[in-house]
Image 1: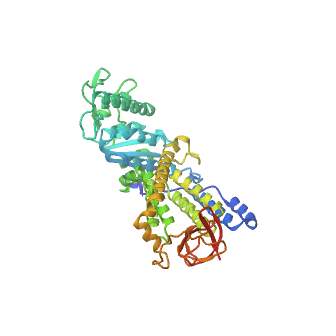
Image 2: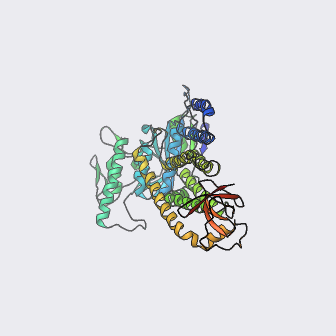
Image 3: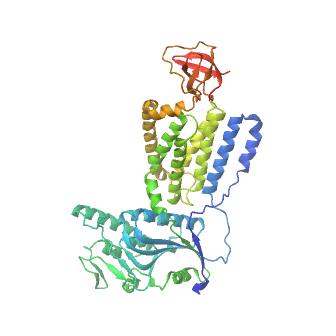
Length: 504
């Protein structure tokens, strides 16, 4: 009976466990430890940790299904207004269903419609489900406008008693009519993509075309189903009527009292049902994904300002927050998992190792930059469990565009800051806050300490800053190492106008 159905809920995106072992890589690392320098060893270990997390996200568990396993059915809601956020719910549901090797997916639909311009993207998501003959739509009350079009991607459509489907003409967001040319273009395109889906699933494409275009007259078995000049809408009884030879339903495969009854028909009385529930963050996720290039640029600029000023404060925290918002938005959108955020953190740690522990070694910094780039790109790739580890060129197109835009904004911002930041009162306050004696006068003479002269750092050298050699502050630079405030330094050489120092 229906009461025997087992229901679970899925709110977030679950990730499969890794199936490949990295024991071989760790064994090689153990053999090489005696021959590796410490910076290279740290880089290798952190990179392998990143690979473990990345591999764990992309590998699926190898499990053998029992012969008498209960049917696993996923229910994805398509309710309320159809907007960009519905893509994220459907994408998350389809990916989770694929990871769980679900036996069927049901779109639980109750909507007046919304934006028909996003239906093509929804079609692409639904087409990724491998068991297309087990893709269903259950219309609970209504499937208007974009909702009726989305149902064309299902293999079978079922309706509740008294429910309605249809009327999918293209209009503007305000509900007003489009210009004649634009209306013809959009209507023709929408009919084309919907017709392709209906033909693919074995449904009647002419029925969906009559819902979209009022100029189409639908006639079956000599009966006018939809006269020219009107948009087709169907009740549950009308949609289930059969026509042609052999008999085929108009659009609905049957009228069923409830979703639970449909689940029982598809999967049996002991079916396990997983309901994908909206998290409430889908709208936020859509906004964050749209702003992703600007978030990355903001994180880079704030990181640059933090690097140029002593200590750790507002700009460093802001950079971290921007990065976290970026990964959170892509996680909500069903594009990224937590593993990519961990990979990003490992990349940042490698860069910090390069800057503060082993400056000048290059290997940790380069490895960190590579991991950060990989984590950002992979976080923006729309990847499904059945996809290969390496993304395709088509999958990388949008991520590379966003990353390129963010890099361009970052470079432009850094160039502007390099010119303007030292002249701002804020920069002066940030720099002077780390000088031992804030009343030390600024040296305006052309004094240049001789090679071998010793002095004391007035600011944190990272690697440039100021030092006092007895005649006021002098701009100095190290050979890549960082030196804290108040440390004795010695002049080693003059390169052009630069005074190079080292700790005593």
